[in-house]
Length: 103
Image (cartoon, rainbow, N blue to C red; front, side, top):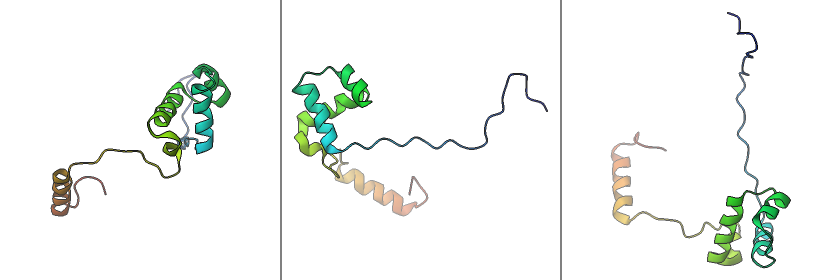
């Protein structure tokens, strides 16, 4: 069977997902201080640093909430935890039915 004129067959190779860029804590603090202390507009920061508006906003919120410590390696923030009865029930169900859910 021939492909229609002008239509190309897709590649059989799967594309690898793009990896997220990892930024250092020092870089994040520098960006946040540019915005907060030097009043550099987010649009300029986006162009200079190649960041999205959402990323800059998220870093600013983290800095305001937790300071520079919020950017330290291994820091996960407050996070949310399940109530103990819910955790216990999940463990109970998983032990009774090992094939349920993920891993």
